Image 1: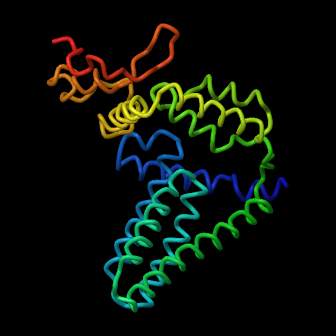
Image 2: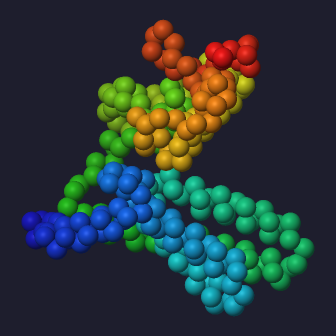
Image 3: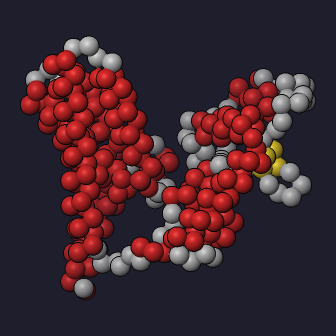
Length: 264
């Protein structure tokens, strides 16, 4: 085990990681944050490049090569940041829908084969990655203690839509993944019933504004908001961003008077 660990963590690996860090630092100052959102930028960018090549290439074998590369790159994306897989899901749904509406049978068949190659490459690559992690990882993962996907959905639809430490600690008290999933699902249902359709749409609008008002996905929350919020007398912020109630819970504002509730 010690020899295996040394192969993963040693001076040479540390030096390469250090140099890579400073190379990426030239792109954006937020690269200094050691978080998966930063690490996933590289495979996502390469996958987007392959998507562009896939859409523009005319040679069959070249398109199949891009399809295989996309599948393998999204294995890296999924292992780095699972939520990044949404790009592959969106592309797959969009491409299948387009081809079902496509009247050219020969072209439809080829494009559907390309989609299938992407999916098979991803599934096959993911299988290999899982086997590699199970046999070579120096850290043993207890799978029945992992946080379920429902937990992250609950966090994303509670408060202001950002990270929520109290919810995380409460969820972890249920110990097993199954019980944590049950708790999170109950809270999601309760949250949706409390908000209702219109209020939930307001919440989503506020979350989107908060994520994009500086173009940094709120990594610099302590900074000053962009000028448009001030020049419009905080109209967007006042109407859509969640407000904090007396019990410390963020709730979206109601429709009543929201258009004229900002202080002038």
